[in-house]
Image (cartoon, rainbow over all chains, first blue to last red; front, side, top):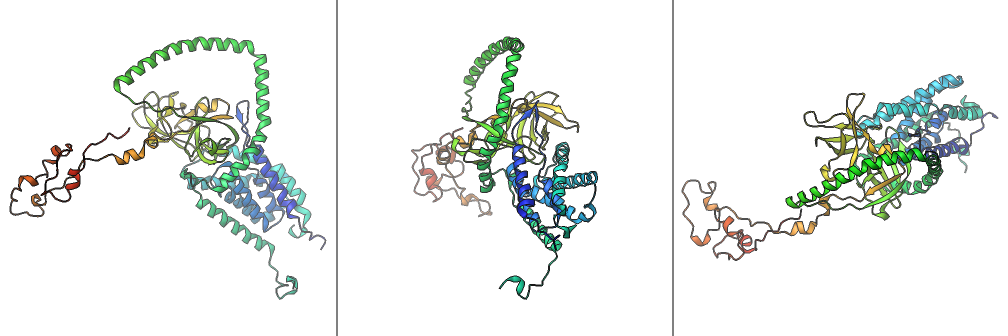
Length: 169
Length: 361
């Protein structure tokens, strides 16, 4: 049972959570570079993708929910919007994790983009229902693009913890 | 007794299933939060304690993070002004010469305007106090466009106060905590602002959609707008004062009229919060409620066609005639005493001194 080494939740859940919160706060600074605003990627998408791929967990969905609620309150959006959108992405990754594990980096990047698109589509739909108005597709696309380039962080997280518990390989 | 030694010690639940159950529970909680959210109502009560606490905590943290960026910007401005002093001086001189003409014209128009106002007896709007604030964080996503300003309830900021920078309207306050206030930008999907086209006075509703250029909805009138028209607030509904600059009209790629916001043309770190109240709120409500109304007179039941349709009623004695044709003449004179034969309902009206006061405007 040497392979059944349980992961320390503080390390694989707590540290990425704090890192996501820190990065989100950092990029919310009201700065403009050559008249352009800073991008606003959804950093929480990185752990939502990676945690589901590393192993099924009871704590991870609640950690994602907390991250989503933080984003909603910090950004001033409707409460529960990002929590629900991220959980939807997490659920899909969990469903298809057998197909995704062991894939090469470019393929996983494609999966990450697809899951990000799904979560943002869900956010679009929930916002439509909540505000009874259609958000700008261009604005959604820019945020999708800014989030997709975060895949290396997700890959690093997967690479770091995927083999830690061989029961879930 | 440890759990493993008990009768349920051998019970094994697959982690995948327990993880799925945890996922469903978390999703249900998220749905409950989303259904309970009342952000779009933009009411003071909808901005809960959690959001207030988050804003209070985020203000110093975001302020500290934004400080190096602000200092860098100031440094770059200093260096730029050092190297481009001559060209800037030429530009400012040309601008100054143009502004002098505008100043003379503005003074003449102000004088003319004052005379017209005195002729018409117009009551001018009271001056609006304001407070300056620094923006410490800024969310720019498609689903939420807000800013956190470092002035809150201690400076008299209230929910609904309009927020401007030096160029134009930025948004309005949707949440206030101690030391911080949350500003909903005009570009947010929940933002609706009554505006008008300056040239034609055509009314519209400025509707945010998460993009940089909000839409003009419900635009009325025949040919009400042209490319480049100036858009200002209309003041309808008393949400924001009339005449605040908003932006310039442009035709969007989707064929809809949109607005390029003036506020986007300048730096976004400092704003002014207008401590504006609707003029109806400024009026003395007590005085509005206590003014005396014209007397109420009742119809003579004898004269009613419903109570006695067949025989025509006999004329009542002159002492009791405070009914239909008379009250208008008798009501405004306070010296009229009630006749002894008057009906009960007519008594207080006739007894009350009818001195209607003009309600304050």
